[in-house]
Amino acid sequence: MEFKDYYEIMGVARDASSDEIKRAYRRLARKFHPDVSKEKDAEARFKEVGEAYEVLRDPEKRAAYDQLGRRPAGEEFRPPPNWNFEFEGEDRPGEHSDFFDQLFGGLGGLRGGAGRAGRGGFQRRGFDTHAQVDITLEEAFHGTTRTLSLQRVERKDGKLEPRVQQLQVKIPAGVVDGQQIRVAAQGEPGAGGEAAGDLFLQLRLLPHQFFRVDGRDIWLDLPVTPWEAALGETVRVPTLAGRVDLKIPKGSQTDRQLRLKERGLPGRPPGDQFVVLKIVVPAADSEAREALYKQMAATMAMNPRAAMEGGR
Amino acid sequence: MKDPIDVHLLDETVEFSLADLCRICGVHERLVVDIVEEGVVEPRGEVGEWRFTGIAVTRVQRVLRLQDEFEVNLAGAALALELLEEIERLRRGGR
Image (cartoon, rainbow over all chains, first blue to last red; front, side, top):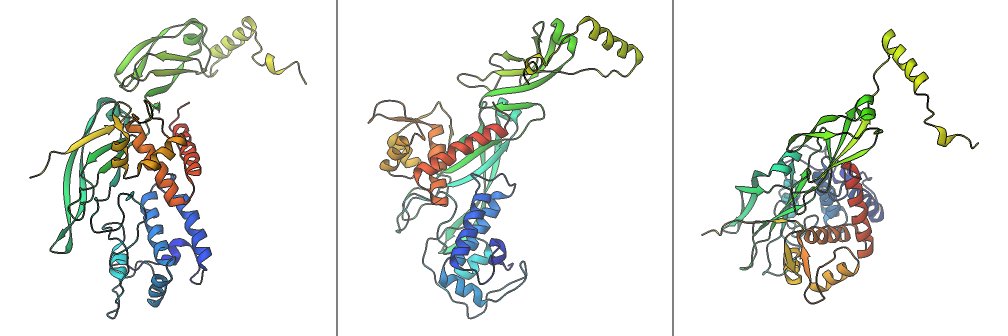
């Protein structure tokens, strides 16, 4: 078991006041809360910070922790033989590090998770559990299945025993980013004959090389040549269901939006695909090309900045 | 014997009653009424016959987590939720 330096985790001095600790927690919670954070390991960091705060905010636990003295974080650690702490609170397996569980008996309070249902008492519904499932845009379009390995903690003869459970979940076609799948009664077991909690899987759409997603609508920047835009031409455009022909209207400018009806993510109603034209200008990298541009300048003289001029 | 696994996609096509929503989110009706009054979720139907979509479940859970873990009031959590959703939308490249 590795020693955890809770002061280091919270970035506070060992003699920090409870106000300083609270402020540090607030700041870190805003940074790493899985709902608001864009950090990659936000969930793990949030749990770590929550655990550190749980110890340091509580004078009794903090004093007990301070007794251990200062050790390098990650050092192999065993609680001292005379260690005997009993803390009130609810047992929430899997919420804390081994280090915390060893020191404080796994009897932490509640941080993280969404265990609202019936706190306290011996009869209560199991806690809901939440997990994130990353899927590609193609998987969202076609539907997919995922086999999840759930870390279960089971009570056997009064002892907690870990167990891995495999669960196959079908993700239907047409899911959108942030949508949840509820797997009834696959959360943590209830106590005193009450029902198990639910498992909530939050779907997260991975970024795509070309497509952007807004709800069920798909956006695509489509590079086109000046003559395709000016003269109007039919071009091949990728969609999630494969390539389609798109007629570019004559006289199109860059940023013109064209809609491919119902070519977005499936649903009721299905999304659309929006194609945004991006005119790509060929380089004047030969004499002939340069001459052509000069001829264009002479024949098609225009001032695209006319609207900006004439004032001051 | 184990019951077959019961999987629901929480999208806008599923509908829950107020009682269902409370059971799924593990909250009291009064709290859901407050959340509705704050405009975080909009039920279909008349009062007393409210129906909520699967999206409402996610929003109720999120707004309550924000409220709990940042110790802000419901209005503050609702504002945070809306800003977060806007940021998520912008980051995905939506318009």
